[in-house]
Length: 143
Image 1 (spheres, one colour):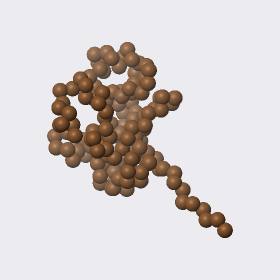
Image 2 (cartoon, helix red, strand yellow):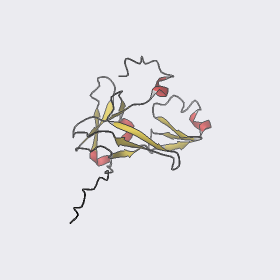
Image 3 (cartoon, one colour):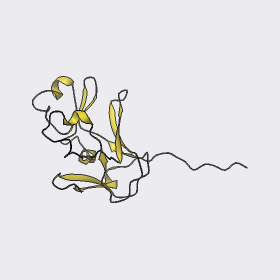
Image 4 (cartoon, one colour):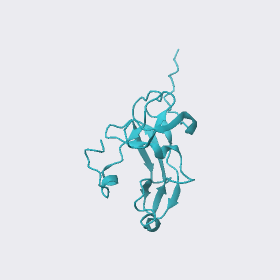
């Protein structure tokens, strides 16, 4: 008799499963916190917003936004405003518990846990070196 293996499918969460409140990092603003335990590989959500071309994303209106995410050639997501969602409240850490998974084919960006996350824990991902190029933030401060 063969035993059935426990399913290893990851779960997909929604906005109701998270809380936006002041970050655990003093002075940084709001952060995103899990309301329940998350397993490694769970999908926190998709980064949503207004879709922009290269030309528009590089215009003075958008180019300095903290919420502009490049997906692929001529496809950016501006994650601020009515089209955005809760995922924009994740802050940076060099010791993240979430990673960004970009699909060039589907032109999407989703956040996936890279380890178990406990209920009440703040969610972080590494913004990457390019994010900091045009800022006046010291690399030491961003850790």
